[in-house]
Image (cartoon, rainbow, N blue to C red; front, side):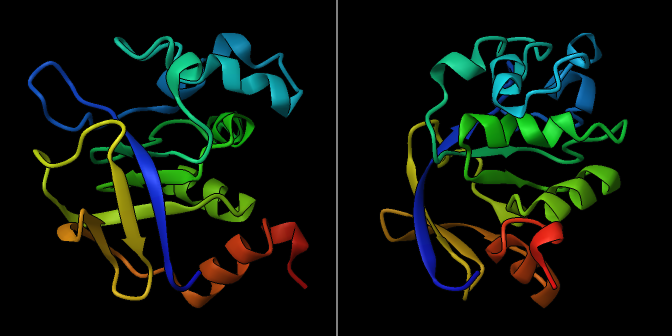
Length: 169
C-alpha cells in the first residue's frame, strides 16, 4: 500500500470527547451472534454491544475508516470482530494501538489497520474526509496534518494488496 487515499472517518468518542479505548471483541461483535456464519450478515451487529454506537451499522458508510483509541480489539480471538467490518464495506480501522490477536486477524484477512502514533483528537469528526498518505505515514484534513501512523511492513502491504494471507504465494 503506497500512495494516498482520501476516506471519510467514523470517530468513536466517549462522553468526555476522547477517543474510546479498550474496545474489546465482545463490544465489536458480541458472542450472542457467534452462530451467524455468513460474513455478509455479520455487519448488522457491529458495535451492537458498544454503548452509544448500537446502530453503527445503520449509519456507517461503505469505505469509511473507523477511528478509535488504544487497545482496539482486545479480548478473544474472534475473527467475526474483523469480518463484521468487511461485511459493511469499511476501508479499515485507525487506532492508537490494537490487541495483538485482533491485529494478526486483521492483517491475515487483508483488512487495513492503521496504528496511529499521534492524532489531533479535536480535529477529527465523523464525516471528515481524511487523506491517508501511506508514503509519509501522515493523516491530513484539508491539507493540514492531523495525525501520524506506523508504516506498514512489506509483508503487511503484500497481504493487504492480495486481499488476505491465503491469497499470497
